[in-house]
Image (cartoon, rainbow, N blue to C red; front, side, top):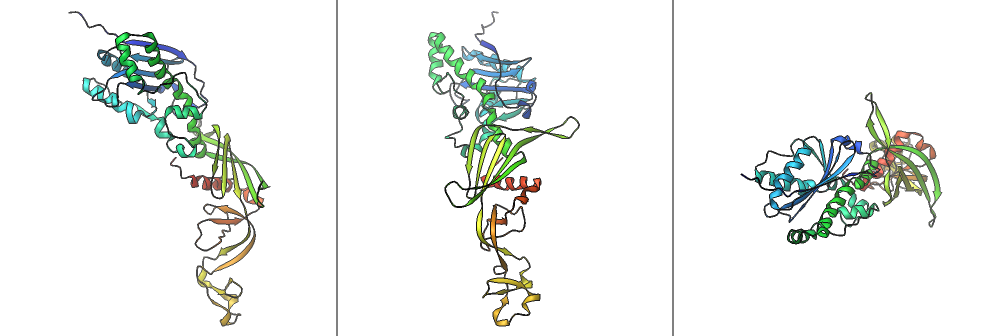
Length: 383
């Protein structure tokens, strides 16, 4: 009996990764595989698989593509892919959880093949970067949009949807130009996937450790007020050889400015620069044990009952939480949540608190780091 001819096209190329991303933050390179698939539609019930591209490490990075000349190649492509995957621990994709993995899992089930994704961890870049869309001002989270943000430009000008008809046309005329076009799109998807990983450094930076480096009190360039500028280095903790954490600097690939109501953040390289608008004037310090105080309406302040007993009754009344305060004048630092003390407010129910500013506030590195974290929380990132 003659065996049916297999028409699979396999392309392999050694490549050098130029990414600045520390791959060990995900896993050892030898445990990693990047992958992307090309199909004739979005439904695994109605559509076919015509190309799988992958990037794997074995004494260097190799980009491998399995191309189906015909639907009969699908099982061979699946077998080739899962054979390579069996030696890996982490599968990296862009929207793999949403499309590629379910598509292949259903094909495996349809063909009755003994393969699954159960023994590999999926690392979907798209899911990781979703908190960054608004932060980075991205129009959307498509792969090409992320590439453009990072200054990565590709030769390919087509989308996966555009190429479906090209694949069907290629099956008719077997044009080398069409084949090159199909392979190029997938090749650049795979080749660029490691190069967009540095976009994750925004998450690592904002969620890492911070080392205070400098502070400066400056005048606002256009307004008559003072601004506190604080500069920090960004670190990520790594496991040391003896269990003690090592610190690795984290650098963001593109400078980003982030504006909040009372603060301004700039991320450049491995630094975060925090500017806080200082308030100069009068605020209120509220005593917590208001039952031990009397309020003096004429003087608009609260005094302790041990002193209030010397004040005529008609000039005093029992203090409430709202009237139990002392007025304080000076220069104040806004706080999203209390970090320093004492804590002051403009009015009793205000959410924004202040503390009296002095350069010595930031002598304590732990509090200086906690202050930056409290500002970052205002970005409301799910990181």
